[in-house]
Length: 293
Image (cartoon, rainbow, N blue to C red):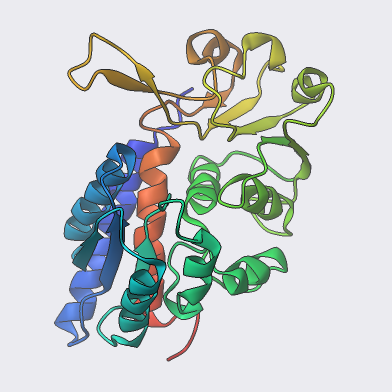
């Protein structure tokens, strides 16, 4: 069966919008999300445009700060300092990737962790790892929300996470093993140096594929009845599309789907949940639910 991230995200955005309307009616300010976009990467442009649209749907104020590829690290750090000090901005993000001459880690650490609605700052990552309240990284948070809303059992389940990135693989593995619902799973993280990946995957009740390798998860890796969460969104050429490309996940969907109990499509699965998780974090920031003012 299909896990419909697009429909779930729409429901959550409607819930957020209703809460924002109540906040405004009670004299509180609208949540305000800002974004910094460097250069003209096609994927980043699309992603930021979706975030701006989501802000409108949720009733948020949004600000987009654009810089060319040749912006200096010092200029970017100054912009971050201004957003850190702006009391009207509840949360902000710096869209990744950045040009090579800029240290992404230095940029991430410059963001006030209380406004770090992407959940990338070491303080938020550290708090997540020990189960303290924090801003969760948006994609892992979206995955956990889908598992929760679809009542997919995770307690005692064998979960295989394919990929060990700081943005998806590591945090989602941490969340899946936490004493929580969803969570309480037995987690194995596989990556490029893991031997016998196929054998490990065949034992999994849940596979979370976040490799960025189109079609890597094939039917021979799947235990019948497994739950498959596909995080991959790689652009592959497609002459039949106006854009000249289409998105392909890490899972060979057509051949894997018949074997699964649940599976996320690409697009329309995890992607919309990533953006709505950013909206949830912004609302939490505006209400000071995680870090009191």
